[in-house]
Image 1 (cartoon, helix red, strand yellow):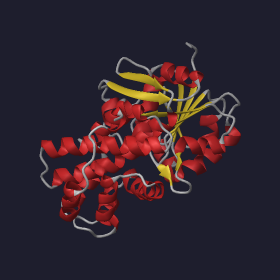
Image 2 (tube, one colour):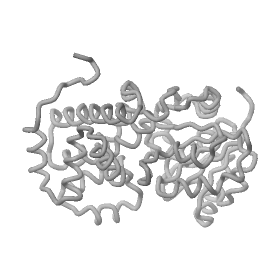
Image 3 (spheres, one colour):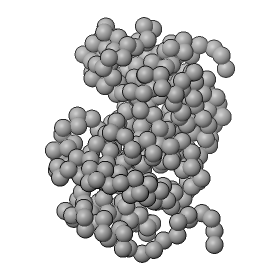
Length: 338
């Protein structure tokens, strides 16, 4: 595939802006849609997203608009980079505007509470006839626009979706890998936000490298165990969308969820932290959904249970940490067999 495509990226946050800029630099006709007309106008005239990616000039050819019809009509490829709580409503808005062949790809990392629904499952429900995919990986937008070497994953059962997204997004600094386990890739992107909160909290409490290594590895084990129970392939979690994204989000204060955890470790209250952040920290919402689902399915997730006890049951962090260390002994690697 080498033709010039029309691509729409929905969502004026940091990641939507970063991938829209890559696609525009790749000489595709690219529209970045923002809900706020005022914000869109400002970004279009100043050629930067001052709110989310201040100081980085956007490609001159990138069209930034609040006109959804203008962005979607005739698009070959649509990326939905909308926070999970608004994802379904925006998907419904675009349905009558999409062409029959238009590919729709979710980049959102979250879970809708009703029915434990992942974002690509919302796409399946609302857009049953469109080819769909998921883009996920260790991708801080700030580093993408700085042209740092970055890898991501496009997951779909449809080879046409994979080919189209790889062609559209690949650049000398942005490499797109393929995976057919859409559910596993998407679960990895959602689950790791919980563990980023835990790792941020541990860092604030002065945890050393031994502790952080243990937390990361046990987080990966929990993610794989939960994902397998939900029908995903646990091997997916050995890739960029699993362990790659986990390492990134759990070890850097560029991660919103890590910053939430760090502030909790400093003794701040959750409401105060979320208010001061000014951006969505999906991990807090995801924690509620995953804790309930793990209890329903009887999946052993001690880190999830521990964080839930700290955030929503007023348990002391030290008490929960002690309980985790003296709890039942478990095997190191779960998928090796006996």
